[in-house]
Structures are given as C-alpha cells and as structure tokens.
Amino acid sequence: MLPSCFVFAQNHFAPAAYSLAAVLAWGTSDFFGGYASRRANVFLFTTLVNVGGLLMMTSLVLSTHPPFPSGRAAAWVLAGGIAGGAALAIFYRALSSGRMGVTAPVAAVLSAAIPTLVSMFAEGPPGATRVLGFLFAIAGLWLITRSEDGHRPEGIGSAILAGIGFATFYLCVRQAGDSSAVWIASLTRTGGLLATGTIILTQRKFRDITATGVRWALLTGCIDSLGTLLFVRANQSGRLDEAVVISSLYPAITVLLARLVLNEHFTRWKFVGLLAALASVPLIATG
Image: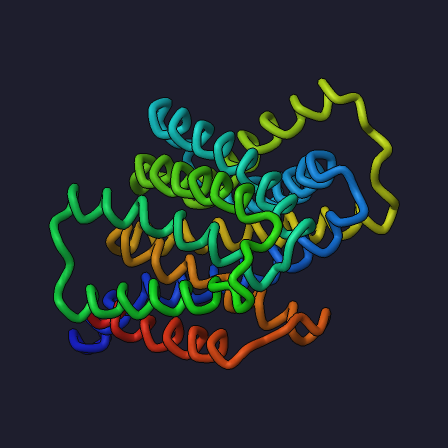
C-alpha cells in the first residue's frame, strides 16, 4: 500500500500535471493549425481537424468501452463542442491573419478569465498562494500579448471572439461532471464537426485545401483532441479555475514554436512573460 503522504501528493498535483500536458498538446496543435490554415479555407480546415480528432477519440471509445454519459451531460458537452468548434475556426483565422505570438495569448486570457470568475463565485475563493499564481499567469500572458509598437495587430478581434467561445466550452464541459473523459472529448468533437460542417455545407467550398493541408488538419485534430482529453481529466481532478488557468498557458508553446520555426520577433518582455507564466504553475498547483 502506498504511504498516505504519497497518495495525497499524487492527488494534489494531478490537476496541474494533466493541465501541463494539455498545454503542450494545445500549444502544438495551435501552431500546426495556425500555420497550415493559411493556405486553406479556415472552416474546411477546422472541419477536417474535427474529423481527425473524432476518429482518434472514436478509436479510444471502441477500445476502452467507457460508459456513455447521461443525457444531461451529453447535451452540455455537445453545446460546448459547438461553441468550441466555432471558436476554433475563428481562432485559426486569427492565427493565420495575424502573428501567432500575439493573437494566441489574447484568446487564452479571455478563455481563462471568464471561467475563473465563475469558479470563484460557485466554488468559493481560492487560497492566497493560488491567487498569487493566477496573478502571475495573467501578468505573463499580458506581457506575451502586449504590442511593442503601440499598434493593434491583425486578428485581435477574432481572437477575442475565440476566447469567449473557448470560455463557453470550458464551462459546458464542467457541467458534465465525472462522465467518461473519452466520451466527453468525443462529443465535443461531434459538436465541433456539426458547427463547422454546417458552415462548409452552406459555403459549398469543398476543395479549398491541398492534400498536404488535409494531412496537417487530421494530425492537428488528433493532437488537439488529446489536449481536450487531458484538460477534462484536469477539470475532473480539481477546481475549474486551476485547470483552466494552467491549461490556458498553451500560447507559451505556440509562441516558442513560432519563434523557432517561423522566426517571429521575440522581445525581452515576451521572455519575461514566459518566465512569469512558468512561475505561476507551482503556485497554482500548491495553493
């Protein structure tokens, strides 16, 4: 039998561990999606992202046979998937039209702030250490986001809409409670596919993407769905605000990849922002 202190530490840090893994997955998928969607119809690209993610999650459902969520939980998750799917398409448009290192954090700040306020109201205020971690995270994301030349970068308006959509996704997923994480991730992809697929059927633009773009979209969907699965586990293991704030640090990965691969400008303040974001994680996890 494991010592009680080890079990406590394992349970205490589990939400942070799941959230950090989601950060890596979501940050990578956003970089792939933002880069590849530059040469495609963004709604068609996002539809294929949802197809790729749904295929991956369906294979997990068939191999693990988890119990299906209740009707109420499934309805909430589908609603969250629709909001998240539409937000993801808008987000990819923001990434492809503007600079990844700026538009990604804007969406992340909004998507973290709204559920955090709701969680504080519903679950009570967090401890002082965790609040300090939240402040570090917000400061870090603001430093990563701020414009160096005083002009608003392209894509900010779309990033704001995407952030609101992602916040709605987080809140809806929370309503699913302890339902199967695999089913939750599958149903969110189903909702996303309904949202973007309907738009594509209306536009009738079925060929505005290359074969390479299709492959990138399917890969992006698999990675993004893995991030969703990890976020659901983080959400089920602890408080909503903890899971959301840490998971919303994914722009740090997107920014780093944009700097390394696309040579996007990386200022001293953005580096300080990344350090502040990293410092927030242990504060939130141990608060």
